[in-house]
Image 1 (cartoon, each protein chain N blue to C red):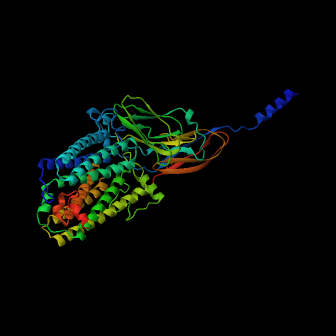
Image 2 (cartoon, chains in turn cyan, yellow; image 1 turned 60 degrees about the vertical axis):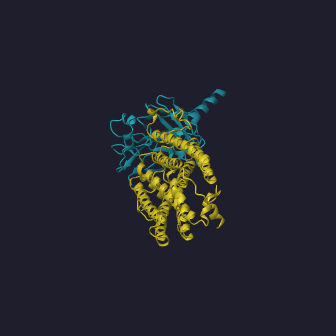
Image 3 (cartoon, one colour; image 1 turned 30 degrees about the horizontal axis):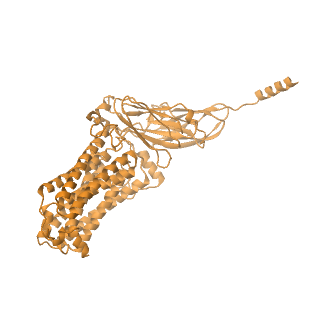
Amino acid sequence: MKNLSNFLLAAVLMAMPVARAADIVGTITFKGTPPAEIPLTQMEDNADCMAMHKETPTTHHYVVGKNGEFGNVTVYLKGMDGKSTGASAAPAVLDQKGCLYEPTILAVQTGQKIIVKNSDDCIHNVHAIPSPTSGNQEVNDPQQPGGADLSYSFPKPEMFLKFQCDVHPWMFAWVSVFDHPYFCVSGADGKFVIKNVPPGKYTIVAAHRKAGEQTQEVEVKDGNATVNFTFAAK
Amino acid sequence: MKANAPVKINRPLHWFAIATAIATFLLLGAGGLVTSHEAGMSVPDWPNSYGYNVFAFPISKWTGGIFYEHTHRLWASVVGLMTTILATWLWRKDSRKWMKWLGIVAFLFVVAQGVLGGLRVTMKMDSLGIFHGVVAQTFFVLMCTIAFFTSGAWQKIFENKISIVPRGLRNHFLFVTILIFLQLILGATMRHQHAGLAISDFPLAHGKIWPDTNPDAIARYNAERMEATNVNPITAFQVVLQMFHRIVALVIFAGVAAAVGLSVKRLGKKDSLTKLAFFWLALIILQIALGIATIWTNKAADVATAHVLVGALSLVTGALWCIIAFARSAKSPETQNETFGAFGTFAANK
């Protein structure tokens, strides 16, 4: 009798639909022609840096593909603070290569390590400048060529915290810090994936430093949810 | 020594004082280049440079922003040494008690300025950078006045029968000089925002006579700006700051132009103070041109630094004019050797 009860209970449970975490996926596109990028003319005065390039690099404020694929857009769920798993998350990597930061747009969790590498044969200083009201601390450390990696983490959420090198003033990167794991940065193909989102209704934000910010509502139910964003030239 | 005996000019001391003032001017330029190239934090440690003693940092590593910051520190050491020698020389050889103490003040000033610069870097405080810039120009004024006080020209004020400068005229020049000092503080505050140009057009400001500073407008300015260097985002405060800087520049121009007119009227065209006033006006016109050029060249480092230097010369010119005018107007010029020099009698008779 007991075994029959257990069997019936298991059958009922299996028949019920079980909501599981899923991904929010999508594509971000840019319509129109973005503003022209600016050549990093100051680099031309630095032989060490120019030796690593065939021609003068430009800024990368807009990463837009041939068909309007919009990269380097930070996508995140709003109102999810307090769910950070940063302390146990794999470190994010910011590299200094060819006297440029790679990547220029990064997103991490509060408490997550950011490893800063110097892949160049020249000195850099790693200078992170948070907003004065964020609660994060400014840092400024030397990093010799071939020197040890530097490691940082930030305890407070903040959008677009700036990393810069004052030895080479054209070098800058922007790191957004979230107090939860539900974010990503769109790739050069414009695609993004926010993984393992629990079922529910959310506000999703796509933020670009120059093109602005857009929000949409999304619901994660059965399987992946899809949200697309379109930014336009102003 | 009799109170009214003329002070013997010590020519080597005077020429060394001039050399120190010139070295200070060059240091202003070196420091100006540091900020203009946004290199102030390129050497994260102090008093060492990337772990090396400042005098042992290999030249091969003086690259990029490090070149400006490190050479600035080296030249500051030279100015510090020259100031120390000057202060010692004044203490030992100048018969005027107030000049001895002025030398001590100069020494303390240069030490404080060095510490300020170091703390700006180690404490990562932009506000200390503003203070460091303002103290630098004040120190330059001090060095120029010391050079002047050791000169024959200073003595001649008391030996010749020169007309008194009317109080109203003196006060006008003093007011405009103080305004230039306030403008210097505004300019230093602007530069140490490290935000590039908060307003990138002239004579309009973001296309208007008075720019919008609401959050949407500020967001638009930042969105439209395609920065090629690591400048901070523009804020409403910075936009307003630049507008005040432009307005005060106009007020200064009007004040100096009026000062020239008043000098011609009250002192005559041939008076040396009138000639100095004309020179002051030429400096202000040049300064305004450089300010406009700073905007039109998108804050080219050499133009912006020249703007800093001409600003310093404008401040010194106004200060020296006031010193000469007040000295000429002291009731008992023979007492210039007493403790507070010519100003002691002047103050007593106020």
